Image 1 (cartoon, rainbow, N blue to C red):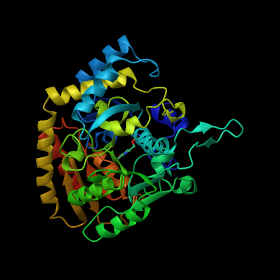
Image 2 (spheres, helix red, strand yellow):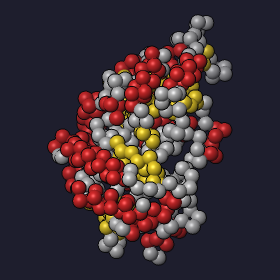
Image 3 (cartoon, rainbow, N blue to C red):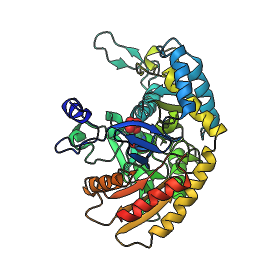
Image 4 (cartoon, protein in one colour):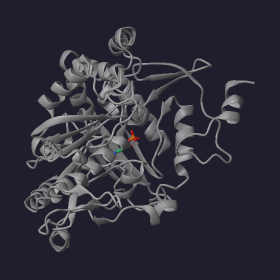
Length: 438
Ligand SMILES: Cc1ncc(COP(=O)(O)O)c(C=O)c1O
């Protein structure tokens, strides 16, 4: 059996309707911006393989660091043990993160990083509300020894159209969409608000005020909602909203899983804002896209609510591969590349080229909402509904591949998010394929 038949027999692919699924493309190697199939065809990976691959594929420096780490210490349980790559990475992240962060909690990917953030935020309020709590032996329920126990906050605040991942907590704070349809009855209570504009900001504030004593945390994708259709929104009003929310003592969780590590032009999208988050979630570009790793960083104040003689206030969360040394070594290597390579300069070039190309695109009929932010450029094909299930995406992916470029639109939202190593010529090739498709 060839690879495709073996795949069809044994594999269930993510985010893919299996019925009448187009045959997956077998890729045998990758390097820089390019993917190579078994027939020797090459494709520019214009979306960095689901937005993760920031320095280009199979980067020799990251590969070398992964090899060295794998030969030295490939894995160790992270409860009761520690290791150099995890500590070094934590030190380096704390140094560059936009906010007053003091602790790093490791997990596996973007979804687990937001799941951890949500759990930390809810348990923060629970830990604070339980005054000298003790377990009743009879019914295993927690009872407080004080009658003046403050009420805990356990509701979450999130944006409509958000995407924070596929685990249950992450789904709960994501848009109620086709992704979550089967689970709506099981998801946690979340107060959804629109992203702010001049017309709705006052009513959003009123809505928050009416729930302020029950909201534990607000989670948001700063500046741009990725999976929700690359929707860019008003940075000044987001800042105003965050400032307002912080005044209500609501924990602010910046989900920078997609925007982190240079995507929007700055190292972190939160750096466009005055208001700093209390918790930040990272993954995707964290390891240069080479290994799965998630990070949830939090402020000292939040961490301190878990530091107590009361064992019940422990954060009982962890994954088998927490702080995997190879993944941490890959992340350190990726940070080295930001210091020692042209990554930051390249981000600037891509940003400028995107702005110029967006200008050109605006003259075309048949497309709308042309927009760009840093290395991200997006627009909608003006055909059918503006929804994820618009099947035009399949056609576009197929036609672009035939022309040597890989893109994967979100419904009729076409976007590019290339690796930073992409050259001007390669980027021009991507643009010319987009123009041909239009
Ligand atoms: C903003 C954001 N948060 C969380 C996630 C989930 O990350 P993962 O797919 O690594 O679980 C994504 C994935 O696209 C994302 O864009």
